[in-house]
Image: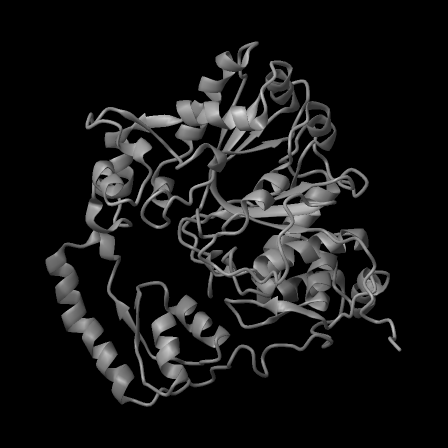
Length: 486
């Protein structure tokens, strides 16, 4: 689509070839960039499930006709079709429905504006009350949704905040998350890819408890109002503003449930002298090959609250971590990281180059065990790096034999020789040698949360550059947008 949009923008006719089932996403992507009803040609069936002969036959006998038609026939809207974003899309202050709560709920469900759960109707009075004490201009724009072309306004943030049940004091957190979505280094446009990764928001800072965020027992479960409502807000915002619905951009084969916000245990971190996840990520900086929308320098240490976000594919509970020393518990934790990493290793090489950053959430009990032995977080990461390994032959199957996501299907040794992977991946030619699941220890991220009396952990496998780890500070200072300046 990107090449077609570039051609169309300078007046060169194009046809975009898409896989069967992606017609809606292609049309929505074009619409988000200002091109409605762009010509599309569809390949028959799934390319991975066909022989070369069958795929060639389908392409010649059917897809070619679509291409010729798209290049020779002026596109027309189907009878009765409406252009989303035109008259059919309500403006910010339109009253779209009135009546009982049941009437409102039914209308929103019909339009696809809700996640299916009951919600608080975003009346104009409620939305204004959500914003009024913040000082923000309701129409201030934080960016443009890369997938839909819609403006990311304070008003739209508040509308979905009201629907999700957030409180007005959560608005700064919602704004920080929106800044992540607007940052090209995050890549919000990938939020509906077929493997169905969903974002996790990690909140750090001195105000987390005062804002009502739970970092203790059930830290990743629904129930705590702040964690649950802000997590739900993100899913609603992706639906209603970014267009991630099943008939448009969301192509998840299965999808993950909405994740509540994960708040780190700040008291424990202060006690043991460990950095927060936000501090670790801020020190590392954004993904270098993608420009950030930040115009100023990224602080090495956030001076207050901060949100960090990435898209995670799956997770593995590491239950009943047994041992009284770091040396005893590290192998089990590392095994959990390995067990949650499979095709995701294409983000070490393939879909991403050395961009796999899984997250290990450990309970405060485990964190204190490490600290009592004098282990820093950096030392824990180094130990995990040595133990979180799998046979090279298995790694190569994940990025080659079992996947079409890595061009050439080269061996790890060949990739190292070409300078595309670190030397640790080819220390011998033994196919059963153990190789790491990340390129360096710092890529094994660690957060601390959960029941302080339990020795459990949770490993999450991330989607590499398809929702890259990105951190923003949370600014609780009242805005001066509406203050008259002399």
